[in-house]
Image (cartoon, rainbow, N blue to C red; front, side, top):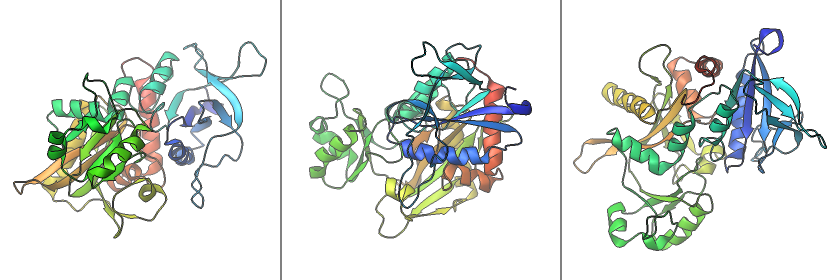
Length: 378
């Protein structure tokens, strides 16, 4: 190992260029606090909103304080070393022709959410530089980030989704234009609908539309985050989540006890403020489900993980309601390949209820990445 006294040197990468920059910072703070200093040497690497990679200044805030969101700003500029044999970070010194190699890295934990981090871009960069990393590879990251292709792959595996439409123009090109949603599509979707950026998370850019007159403004808000916009029918019922971890040894991936999110009275839906800023939700961990329904949720979560070729971890989000025939209806909403690791994040809380505490969870993810090694198609 390249760390001090044989410790594993872990580069925790956070921040990034997406709208989820602040949540990534909070997640990274939790991950770094959980890494046992007797076993790991942590190298924090922040990515500023403009894409600069830095070793953050001492005292970098990584918590939400009085509603204030953290942000990567100053620090020493660094870059990954392009040579796979070097496996390191280089300091970018002003006026120097090349960077000075700072340190070797054993494994990277890219605690990045959203575009330019959770969508296969950073994963491809890490594979080119020969560094093992936590989480899914290029394909699974990209496919899971794009709600359109998540749904297509899940459908191919026989897994259920709700009615939805991707806005396209007459030639099939992606087109965030509300006029392309014709009356037939509106009738099929019904109201309310959720208008979403196709490649974003943390409920950023999402609008609940209860009247079609609201639709153009909702499309504009989503398109400001991502030019591809998806419109989903609301699925009445309970909101349930399930965590998945890679199997230890052979066999199926492991599913956590599911959790249910219950919004407090007066909260309309689980938006960004409800998730991170307001005391707007209650959580049942485990969810109050029959043994058969719990097994069905866990089975569907594992199947979704495999259908998207995920690695390491994922969180699968469901709606559980009643169909027109009165039967239970389980619908997959989305698959998240790098779920939040904040103190209130559901992924860690579900695994804690299942018997894997936060420190063990982080340790298991790092160990799995080291065991996978650095190889394409991981």
